[in-house]
Image 1: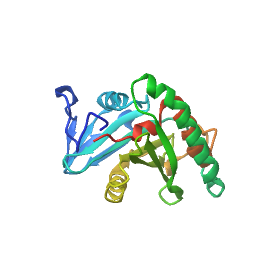
Image 2: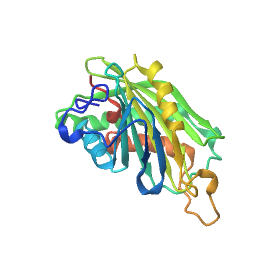
Image 3: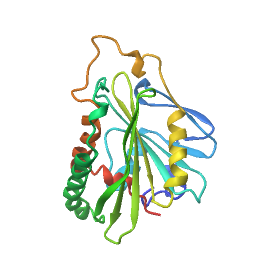
Image 4: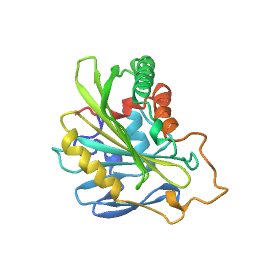
Length: 240
């Protein structure tokens, strides 16, 4: 992960994973649990935040980090959770992929000065690998952005947002373009291994619950605004 992880191996003793699969991992705030499969390791909230910060990203929303134990598998999955309130999905047909892409590009370029100040190389969003797509049955929205650094080394961010009763769980895959075809199905499988606590599921919504100020469009486009402030795209940069 970044310069810290390579195929799931921690770089320092204090980076020892909190769990090794197969194991049941409880997620923060009684949100639910992850059935961590064999061949994966998991870092809880505190260690995951430290790992992500070392990459020039980092977020107070980070609640976990997953990586394979296979030294040849160069990818990782970051879990984030934000208590946004219930996100209505009735605007699913109004997603403007072109406008959202432009916002991501502007936000990432604006964040490059901060990256340089931290001694990190600039990165640039080049386009969609997968435009935003919403599954109304599972309440999951996915999209994937392609990018490069100043050396023209390519990378990709595969993003998954799972809607819950009270907020949004983000499952962010970080890998190179070359590793994406093999890594994407694994990230999707890990998402399926998450079980929400009864009362936290999207379908558990009750009248009177907190409602998010924006719908799906705001959820996806909001990531572009966050990129400018916190280096969202930077967190997808995998450095072998």
